[in-house]
Image 1 (cartoon, helix red, strand yellow):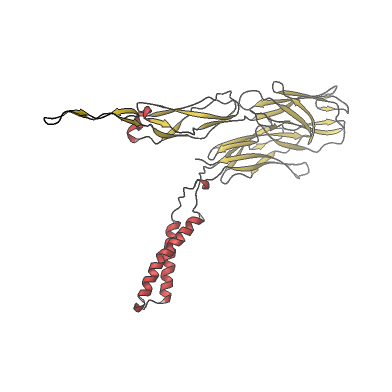
Image 2 (cartoon, rainbow, N blue to C red; image 1 turned 135 degrees about the vertical axis):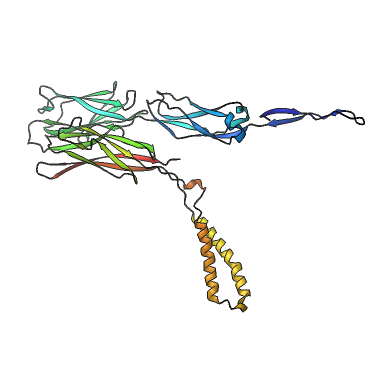
Length: 398
């Protein structure tokens, strides 16, 4: 019978001896069967389209499987802010009224989008290019762009080396800096975007300027991560990070690339694999391919202890039986061998079971700090190396 409320009545039609009769009504309620709805983990970057949602139902009776479907919907849209949004399952089909879906429901997570920050329009008043005299006014424009859609908001801090100079708000993704307080010598400008609710922080490639004449500078390069420096992915998928290289003082050596700190069995590839002298664009992408890992369980010490007790209980009857039959010349040595064999057999049988349903044994997400190193050669033949780091977090596949 379908789920619902019923009133049952028994009717006797009577016979030649007994008259017909009818029982009082009996109220009967058939409650809907509770189901569990699950979806794969859903992660979307801010500004990306919401994918088609799909999942599975657990608890459907076999006879109803062909007459019941589930559809998943969410209030999140392409422009929704970063955060977690509930996914609502709805049942359809001829037998949908016989079932209900138990909470909690699945969810969809929108994470902040990556950003790319660039320095441009570097102008020294009254001079040519990015070289001026002491006291010259320098104007620098910083532009922050999203790797998806939308315009980042917030503020940008301009660094001279590691020293902060100014912090200016973004207007339509741009921040303009003006200063005349630079001392004579070389200055390396870097811009840092603080991030916001919907956009991740980022760091620009360094921009070198020289104030005054000074001694000739040594050819070199600077390496920095651009865009998002932290990503979370499911194991078995890939992650891409972008980097920028700023060559200084006519570096004539190619720059080779390498990565360390990768997850076990993961591989890193670079595009391009090597940056030739004067490469345009002076940027590259590192793609990390990860192996598929799943949550694993292992036998607990408590389980082995239970196996040991079972072995002892098994051996004890054997020992008693052996003592009763001492008249058959069962020596103490044979008794000991029999006991050891019994315990070993029990422990071995226990060790063969590797299934443990304890949910606390599932593998947690793990973060890796990956170091990308560029290597070039100076005019004197000595190596030039600079590095940048990014963080990759792996969630085990369900």
